[in-house]
Image (cartoon, rainbow, N blue to C red; front, side, top):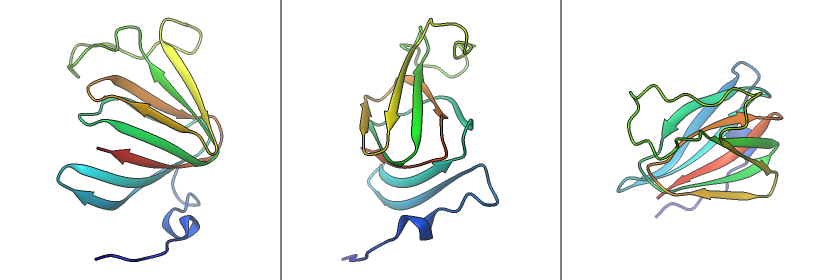
Length: 122
């Protein structure tokens, strides 16, 4: 059994990279990761094949869903709406907040501030 106290500052360091994702645990397709993005960095549109919870440890994220977020393929050419177009849904998630989404939904993330967050995939 694993018993360990971890300091987030020891796990993630954005001094040399604009983004970093570190695996903390994995079990039968479930994952616990810690991630960090510098301000304005983006995780491109993608589909998670598990349910996902994002817990913002520090900073602020914007989670975007394009208008056609029911799409279940990655090759259909559906792009995220540009920043001046409000066709998709956008959610701001701040320090201390959780955001949950179901599997098989197209989405992307953008850091509105330097941000550190837990990514829980179940």
